[in-house]
Image (cartoon, rainbow, N blue to C red; front, side, top):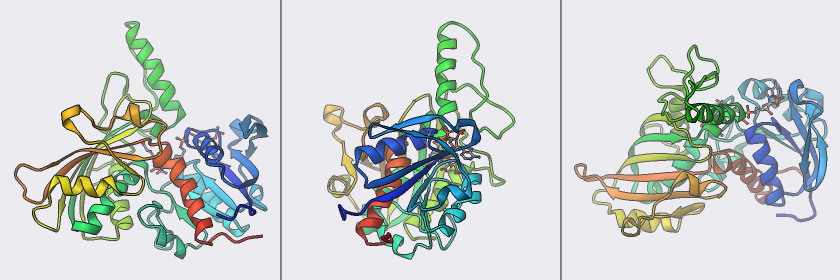
Length: 351
Ligand code: NAP
Ligand code: 3JN
C-alpha cells in the first residue's frame, strides 16, 4: 500500500450496526483515511461519532454529499444504495456496497478478497460486498473447489441477531429480560421488518430470514444460493440453503455439506487444505473438543472451520462447521479489505 496517498472516505449508514463496525475497522487497520464523511438519514443527522480521537458530525446522505469522495462504503439498505450509489460514482467515488442492490448485476464484481480478487479489475465504479452468510461459506469452499472440484453444497445457517441491525439486537435484549422476569415478550422487528407477523427471538429459533419468495425459499436463502454461484463462477453448482435466526448477538455459524468432483477425498485432506487457506483458521480436534463457536469468533477477523468429517453414505460427501463474525468478515471487514485490495492492485485513481 502506498503510505503517502490518503483517501476521502464516506461511510453511508454510519450510525448503524455495520456502519459503526466500518468505522472501528478503518481505525483498527489504520486505513489511509485523509478525510472522513459520515452519512445517515435525517433521523441521525447532527449525531456525533468519534474516529481516531476526533469528533465527526453525521450528515444527511444526499447526492451532493459525495463531492470529492474517493471511496464510499454503503450500508444503509438497498433502497439508499439504489438511490445514491450511482450519484457517488458520477462524482468520482468508488462505491463498495454492502447491500443486495447490485450484487447480481453482471457489470458489478461481487468480491471476497481471499476468494476472487481479480474480479475487482473489471469494476465500473460499484463493487458489491456479498451477504455475510455467503462470505464465510465461500471463504471455506474456495480452496476445496480449486483442489477437488465442487458438485453440490447444502447449507443450514445459525445466524446472529446483529445481522438484522441495531433494532433487532435491542429487541432480543428486551425480550430476554422480559422472559427472565416472567413476562410475555413483545416482538416488532424479527423475522423481517417488512413482513406481517413478528416472533420473539429470545429463547427461540426462527427459520425465516428476510421475506419468503414464490419458490418457498427466503430471500436470504436465495442470496446465498445465487451469490455462491457467482463468486465461485459456477452456474451449474447445485446449492441449497436453509437460514435460521438464533438468539446470539454476534457470529453466524453454518453446517455445510458438500460433494466434491473428485472421489475418495479424506477429511484430513480437507483439514490440511483449510489449515493453509488465506483468512481461514482451522479449529478441528474432537479429541480435545476443539471446534469453532460464535462467542469465540466474535471480534475476530478470520473464518473458523471445524467438525470436518466424511459423510457416512455418500462417498464424495463431506460435512463441516463454519463460523465467523458476521459484522466483521461478513460485512465491514470484507468491505475494508476490498478497498485495501483495490489500492494494492493499483485500481484506485490517485488525485
Ligand atoms: P441498522 O443498524 O438498522 O442501520 C441502518 C443504517 O442505515 C443507519 O445508519 C441509518 O441511519 C441508515 N439509513 C437508513 N435509512 C436511510 C436513508 N434513507 N438514508 C440514509 N441512511 C439511512 O442496519 P445495519 O445492520 O447496519 O444494516 C444496514 C444495511 O447493511 C442493511 O440494510 C443491509 O443492506 C446491509 N447489511 C449487509 C450485510 C451483509 O451481509 N453484508 C449484513 C448486514 C447488513 P439512521 O441512524 O439515520 O436511521
Ligand atoms: O440477517 C442477516 O444475518 C444478514 C442480513 C443482511 C441484510 C439485511 C437487510 C438487507 C441484507 C444483505 O446484505 O443481504 C440486506 C440486503 O438485501 O441488502
